[in-house]
Length: 238
Image (cartoon, rainbow, N blue to C red; front, side, top):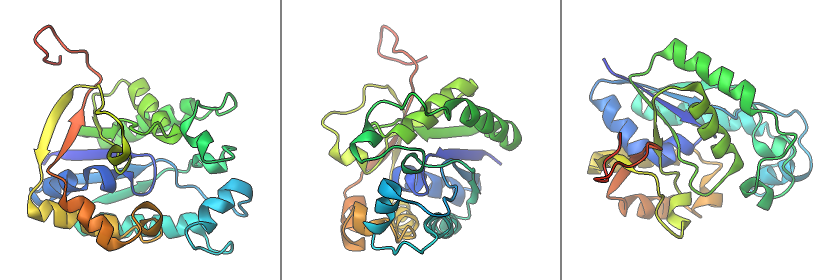
């Protein structure tokens, strides 16, 4: 049995970006595990962290991250994947104080790269994946870059997904070479939709409605996995 492990920054990124591929691998009998990095709680969020909760229509007294972890377990259950939640804080809870800061340079006092690298190394050693996936960081979200950099620092062989829905808003295609093109079937799209729809708290903010999410997924032809390996003289990757 092949073990596919996806290292997701947030509680939705893997499903949003490669849900069809993960669903197909699970149907084929592979073991699928989604490890999400930034899932820890803040007891009383304030400022921008609280605003990120309120702008999704959730009152201040809701345990936002527990709600999101529950959504993630529901999404993983769609394809029978295992959900693992690491105890790190997402950027608004680490001092990033506004939306533009999430897409700017990493804060000088954000010391999460080293402990995240250690934690991911431990998970990789324990899970022993045959195929390891992570974010390309399309859109330049600071948390996505942290995961990409931490994965690179572990030294483990891995492929990078095109972050969605950030990819829909990108001005140009990523530069990194494509290593795998996975053509989506109707069943892949249906299971990707079911996974994504489980993240109920995120859908109005990201897509406006489930109907808009379905339209966006219906337009997808393939999911691409890329590598940071340099291109050879013939355009191939090493």
